[in-house]
Image (cartoon, rainbow, N blue to C red; front, side, top):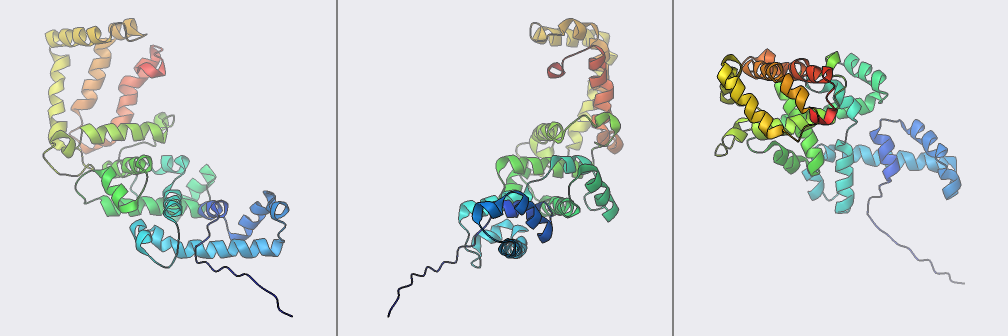
Length: 317
């Protein structure tokens, strides 16, 4: 009596996205198994609890072996140990470097290499993000910072080249690196209403307009440092509030440009002198490191809060 048996052998590494997400979120194998059971996977597949436990452990072992490659994403493209399709590789890398904005908001502008375990414990408790995931977030930020901090050229391009991130995620990392390098204060109570997205938007504009490479397109310099000469030149703006004729001319030009475009035009026109003086005074102080660090605090105090007092809509600040 003979029987036939068809056998298929393959070496493609299988990646379960849901289990990968649980691993990234810092859950232990046992916690991940509980969450998978709660999702109804046993009923959907007909598997036993023992098989699910074994499957989860197998995936976790694979992820731990992949992690060293995720620390240097270009290596993943050229390694031969794990046969993973390019689209899957991109997903693994992008998900590994993705972050929770609640965590970023807690560390934005702080020294990335100064944090203690207690700091991460506090952030984990405050945000509800597991300690292990908090540690992965911070290690990723440190890794990107160390790789690109001395590189010339575009910060976003350098991050994309060395970490293979999407354009949006690379821009977010550029903002994190830029804020860490310049130590902008973001933790004061009056800044709590601002999201990471708000700061990332500001970082992108500052990189494009305030850095040495932005000021002089012929200079292939870094995007991380503010141009000292540009900040020094901002002191010259004080003439706009010190000279009455120039103040009146400045007001006239601004009002002409904004007439019919601003719903609170009359309020702006009436309070122009105070608003202009506030912005000019903030700009003129940026030659000192402490004032650079306090830029966003000063902008809220000198400009945003007066606009709020005049009941300006958020989209017209």
